[in-house]
Image (cartoon, rainbow, N blue to C red; front, side):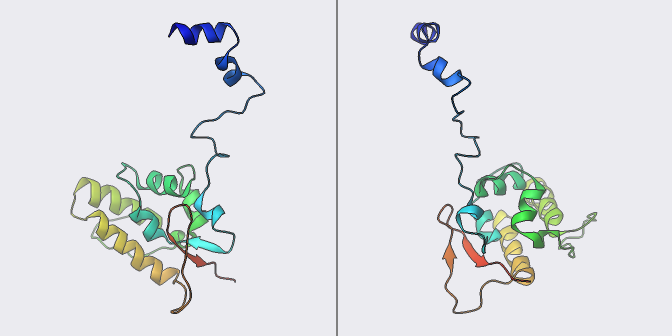
Length: 162
């Protein structure tokens, strides 16, 4: 402790860290992160079910997915990577869900059925997302080579050209 205080007073490493000209080097620095969707190129999209499968246990599924893709936690970040998450769907449970888009339903299923009631497993939720993504954003045609993200290993698919 005394050494750190002496270095600070003498203009040591602590001053270099806090100087206005120094760059802040923290794990939250967006420049230091390499988001998956950027490293995969503009014509590729990550496969959401595989990104979810690599999520560690979190209280919030949006935060968990955003951490894997290197984005700040937000609905917008997820909808930018996977626009089909905005599609309205039929909810796979008897619950009443307001504005049942894929993303809102995913959050409901995770919060209410996986975490609270525990009548869905996380792997069941991942399978449900895989089925929805296959229906709304089909993967590459059979026989097409499958690319993988260098950052997290998730499958990539080519963006549809409209």
